[in-house]
Length: 194
Image (cartoon, rainbow, N blue to C red; front, side, top):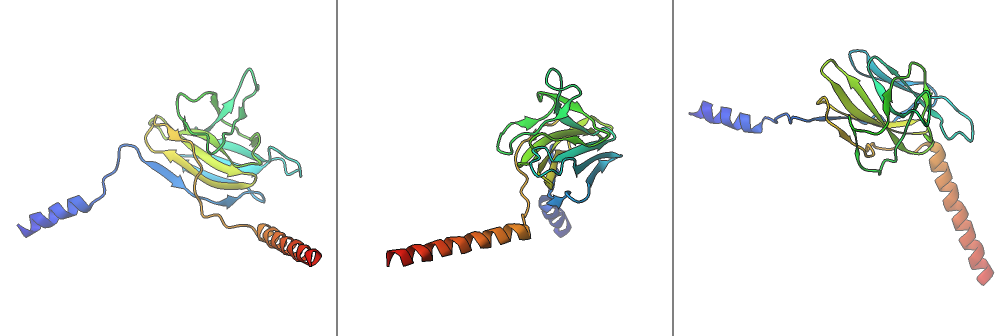
């Protein structure tokens, strides 16, 4: 009796796997100096790198794919060959088989339009049992994360991938300088009023 009760308790405590599971990889990876590669398995890879390091570059990030991995892109009549497309992180909706655009693979890095700001690119790959859909969340030379469905054919919701963001030293310096200038302006104002 005790053994059957213990087995029943263990069965209740064991988590069950849902039919649709989402894998989230919060990378918080800087790829501005060197490409960042991610392998979904079976040689299906995605690589992020900087393709336009100019000071006024609106499309600095580039994406390349390997295996069956493809990126949601805009094709004809807008672009021929297709170009990766990006979405705002708070756009809503999902990436899946019914997404507008075409999925295309890129052997060499293709520029992601307006990747200077935070955005989402859609992706898909096939591990031999049908396409799995996912997203990559990036801005400039920073990849915040990758999220994808483990169930073939299931759509993935568009949205920012939360990652513990650690500000760069330059951001801290700018913040401190801003506070210093604000303090100096307040002291100057008080001195003028006195």
